[in-house]
Amino acid sequence: MKILGVETQSSVRKKVSVMVPKDVVQDTLSHKVEEFQKSARVPGFRKGKVPESLIKSKFEHDIKYEAELDVIDHTIGSVLEQSKIKAVGSPVIEKVDYTGDGDLTYTVIIENIPEIERVDFKGIELKKLPVPPVTDEQVQEALVKIQKRLGVLMPLEEQRPVRENDLASVKLTELDRNGKPGKVNDDLLWAVNEKLGKHLYDQVTGMLTGEKRTITADPAKNAQFLLELKGIKYIKYPPIDDELAKTSGMYATLDELKSALKKDIEEEIDRINRLMYQDMIVAALLQRHPLELPVSLVKKELEHIATEDQELKRAYGMNNKQEIEDRLKQIETYVRIGLTTRIFFDTVKSQENVVLSDEEVKAEIAHIAQHNNDTPEHITEKLTKDDSMDTVRQHLINEKILDLILKNAQFIEEKVEK
Image 1 (cartoon, rainbow, N blue to C red):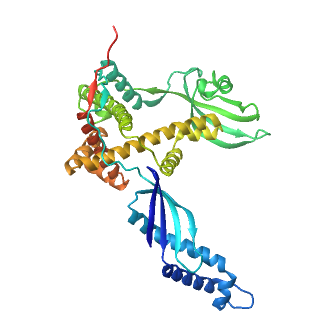
Image 2: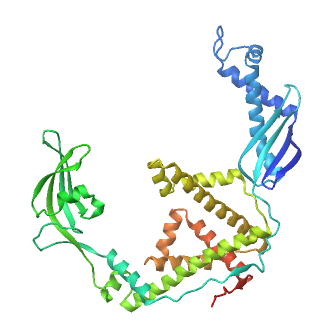
Image 3: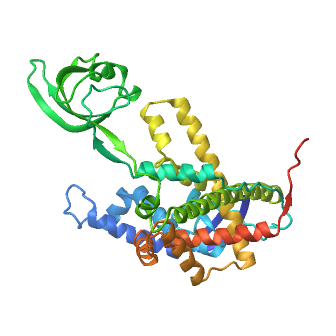
């Protein structure tokens, strides 16, 4: 196999011309003839006993076509290796030229990762983002979230009818057209509010514990059920005190929990700021190094994310074409930013020799463990089992690259108009 030439059609698209010598092609043709001879069914001959000359004449075009595919399939890897193209997606065969007795030539279109010899990241101007202090109100909101998470359902001791905003424990029995009971759904918990629906709300409110009613669940279908109110429940929330701190995690006192929550909020503010800085950096780098992305790479990432996107699934379920189109555009924007960031950061990693030590990985795992009230050993085991350790390492590398760029950036204080 010999590469005849490489034509750069764009920064992410190359056209490679390839020649495969006739002896290699002839060997492939011979093997292909043998394959056809073993499997072909021809009237008047037993399977595997058809003369070679008849096989060649009867299946000439099929043999030639499959042999060409085999030659290309067996040589395309060497083409990528010799051309040193960092291919993405599947190569597309543009043209095949073979007369049947000479060399075979073909041209292939290959999309590649755009090559950046060096990223000029020093001196990037960035708007200085504010770092607001954590307020007591924010800490209190975080405490209330923990309090609600630890709430326990309790039966209401007061004997009264169901009213708005109650939690009703009900037993629902399907009724056929003759009123005969069918499937039973027991221990359902209904929140008696607007989410229940006005139609059901009007039929449930006013019921007493132990009371039974025949209700219509769907007026359009006249679906009827026997509804039994088993009880009214409420959520009992624990007081915000030292006991709450002990229950929610490894904290001895409420003050310790507050300190931890304050630190978490500070880390979240820092995380959001760093993401915003990263976006600003990528935008600035694109000004210095305009970058084209391979179509196949964008498509592959888009399809991967789209299959997991809940908003898109909901839009498809409702057959909302406009919402589907808008969401796909949002995902594509996200994909393009992510791929651009990856290409720039990978280049910086290589040119600046950014490496990660085992100690840094251990420190990150210890941080994750502390945040999840777990042990480093268990977190390590879980990450290894889920094949997520490389994700952690990549995140830490990206953070080091971001720190490097921020260290060399020029921050501009935003002017406040008086």
